[in-house]
Amino acid sequence: MRVETLAIVGVGLLGGSIALAARRRRAAARVVGVDASRAALDHALGRALVDAVAGLPEAAAAADFVVVCTPVDCIASQILAAAPACNPGCLLTDVGSTKAEIVRAVEGCLPPGVAYVGSHPLAGSEKHGPEHADAALFERRQVIVTPTPRTDPTSLDRVSSFWEALGATVRVMDPEEHDRALALTSHLPHLVASALAAVLPPELAPLTATGFRDTTRLAASSPALWSAILQANRAAVLEALARYGERLADFRAALEANDRAALEALLARGKQVKDSLADR
Image 1: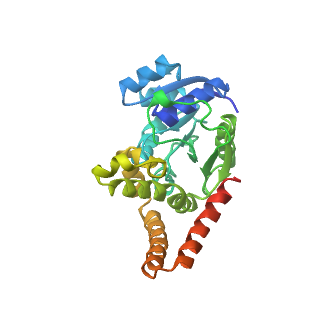
Image 2: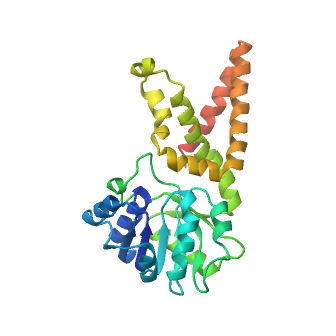
Image 3: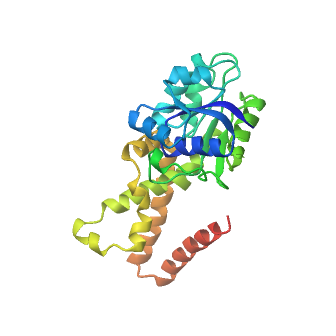
C-alpha cells in the first residue's frame, strides 16, 4: 500500500520512526508532521523525517492517512479534532498502547467516509524524541490492530497493509483482549521496573551492575506518558498486579519456610518461560 499524503501527529520516537520508515520504504509520497513542540518539528524537518509541518486541521485536510502518535490520554481527542477536516476516504489510526478506551471514545463519532482503526506497534524504547527515530524500528516487529464488529473490512486491510509496508507483521485482536494482554506483557513490566528502581537507597547506587541496570531499564521512561497508560488500563493492570503479587508471595513463603526445593522450582518456572521467548 502507498499513501499519497501521510500525516503524523506527534513526531517523537514512534511518530518520527513511522515518518522515516514510510519515506525510505516509499510507503508514502509525502509526509506532514504535526506537533505541539516547535523544537520537535524543527528537528523533524532538519533530519528530513517529514516534508512539511502544519497544524492538525490543515494536516488532516491534506492527508489520506493519519497516524496519531501522542500520549494515550490525548489520542481520542486529537482523532475527533482531526476527523471533521478529513476528506472522505481518509483513514485514521494511532500507536497507543491501550485501545479499548480510545475505541469507545472514537467509534461512531466520525464523519461519513472517514474511518478509524486502532493500532499498537510492539516497538519502541525508554527513549523519546525525533532524534531517536529509526527507520528500522518496525522491521520484523509485531503491530496489533484492533478492529471491532463495526470496522469496515477495507479499512482493516488498509491499516494492516500500511504497517506491513513498514516491515512489520500484523496481528488482529479485540480492543479489550489487547488491553488485558498488554497489561501483563508491557504495562506490568514498566511498573515493576519503576518500583524496583525506587527501592534502591542512593548510597547503594555504586554497587549496581548489569542485573539491576538491565532489570530497571524501563524505569527511565517518561513518567507522564506511563502514568496515563497505567490509568487508561487500570482494571487490567490491577489484575496483572494481583497475579504478580501471588508469585511474589510464593517466593516469600518459600524463603520463610527455608524451602530450597520450592525456591528452585519457582526459579525454574521463570527460566522456562524466559527461555521460551528466545524462540519467538
